[in-house]
Length: 108
Length: 114
Image (tube, each protein chain N blue to C red):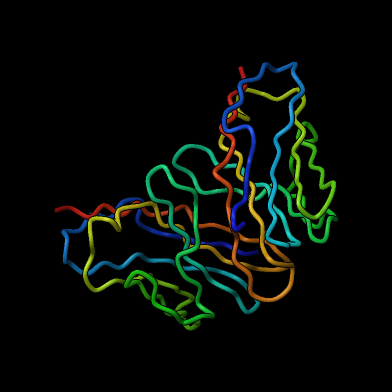
């Protein structure tokens, strides 16, 4: 079975502070991991994916197979980063499974 | 065109009504999805079509009936729904069913069942 967990429902940080949104997964094969973001009144959209090893809007995420984690990090949070963040796993076929989400609130 | 378009944006229906949700994409994507999202919850996968064939049905009740008339269109036919079916229904597409792909989401249809 494939499962994604995000332990924090809400994470509040001050502007300029580092931020880390945690994601853990369980999957028997080789997973593909993604972070999706939903800004207020906007559609759900891809932020980044582990296979690309990219940095988007200052965010990075590293897949740690030993710890089965894919935490999202940014060294200096901005107010515009406030949004709902979902970690997602693509397992067999086209089965994308989403974690419960973490709402990030960046305070001024 | 890099968008997934869903209509209608809002729908109110009674438990005896029959209605349909529509989704369209013109990006040449060959996999299309229906997700259900309740308030403050993550999207839950309902159906996946790959190359116009139903490839995943996540044990969805038969009152939800998907249809993929062609590679650009995806419908969700609704009949005899229950109030607990009220939710945001999201359509998504991805390039194909193999390899790494990302999901493109529509803005959703907010469904209320009275």
